[in-house]
Length: 337
Image (cartoon, rainbow, N blue to C red; front, side):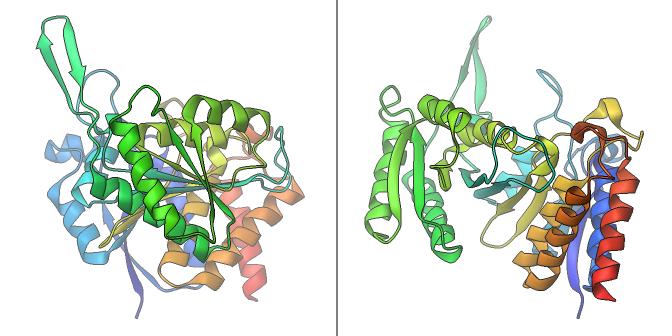
């Protein structure tokens, strides 16, 4: 039986990179039944809602989705589709592997860090209101249950993938109740996993240490807003947002997406780098048990990057989205034959 996967192309460069990722997955030979749904601006224009109920229903039914980037209006407009999606499906764990890739110029070599971000609480949830005209308030709400389960996921991932250490980021010196609760939960989970080293790092110091030398870090565990910021910082260590995949994991569903945004300024121009979403598709295949196909995608991406002839302009080349897609597909088909 084929795997049933909900495909959300998104908007901006989303349709281009989603089409490339789909072509690469199909080239592995894994049987996928793609259930296409619209989200973001196309859905807003058609249905008056950027995240229609039909999208959530499809993901609940298939249990897995591959999602292109979706534009979030700045300052005004509708609520972030990403935030709504994560809350509605309780996709509590955001996983972003940050790894050096061959042939990609960057400041460091051998970077191999996994960002584990709590995905449902904290300042990033957008719980805001106006107190009086000219005064607004944002609520930072933490719960023991959410802090505990994200810590448990981080230690589970470390055990499963043979990683050595979990670093919990915080600002408990100032936010003693919220970040203090987060640390208390992390400490309890760490005590149950003594085979994994555990440390605590103040968030601003963590950012400085990553910029100076990311080598000491392995699994980095963060609350929602810190994780959003640090995952972009870490992407810059390995060549930028176009190189880093992402997964949003819940109990009943999982959504795989690139770290980068919708880049409307280059939409429709065949300029976007599809590698981040292609690598996200590899994470998706691993999630559904197609580990061999996932590894073949990663190997094909690395071969194309190592060869160096097909690069999008963010990597110093002149290739288009379709050129990168075709080069990776050709590697896969060669490996299959």
